Length: 318
Ligand SMILES: [Zn+2]
Ligand SMILES: [Zn+2]
Image 1: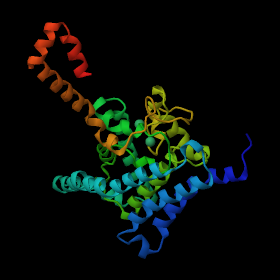
Image 2: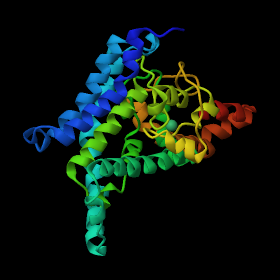
Image 3: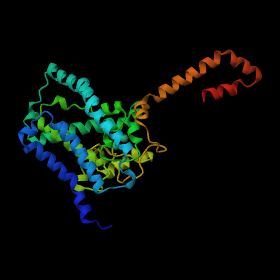
Image 4: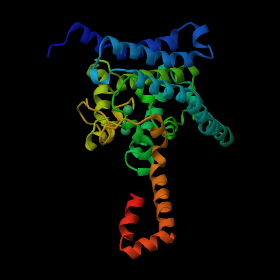
């Protein structure tokens, strides 16, 4: 099908937004760039801009934002920016910085790299860790239980990257970037670049960036395939933003998904997403408790006399 001018313009928006992000952190007014709230403003702003683009050039009507999805997305965006960010800071980054100081690790070489190389280093370090964490989540049940709620989402949009079980959100935010001595603006530029790429990789925007972008960076085509309902497709394209890693490690797969979700495509509530990893343990506990009183209850023996004991027991535990 012939692409319209609008299509072709939209295809260039993801790389153009990366250029704007890099330009801002490299050359923006110091009063803004050095402001303590700068990252706290730019990060949600990127998501909002992409959400607005969804309204202008939608990819699938079935993924269209509605009140229920918006409320869920907002909850997770706030949770990620507050509780999860604080936990990551306290439990991972500060201990890492302390370890770095006590062991005497110095990475002054990193601070002397050109600014853009520092940005690329941060992107690579974060994405390398996320790639293997994500792959582990798809290959080991305890980790899968934390990641499965993200795969239960039944439609995609720019804010969906933040939707998932809180344990997963914490695990996926871990990185060793704190070990490196780097320019603060380079770190923020990298975080915002990843925000643009992963935002578009979940977005309901009709934008298919050119191969010089999609060879390195994850697009909605790659990531919607990862969110597909069929098992084999979910075991590919693990790179949250750097699809290059899938090409290198042999998990890249071409294609695109439209129907997204897990199993029977049941949409989970926030409570179900939060409790999801604990369900097997809770079920096992319930099953044990259901068995115990039945085994010792006098009623059981009476029923057994009637020859209905097994049936009654089976009904009680089902
Ligand atoms: Zn996944
Ligand atoms: Zn996703």
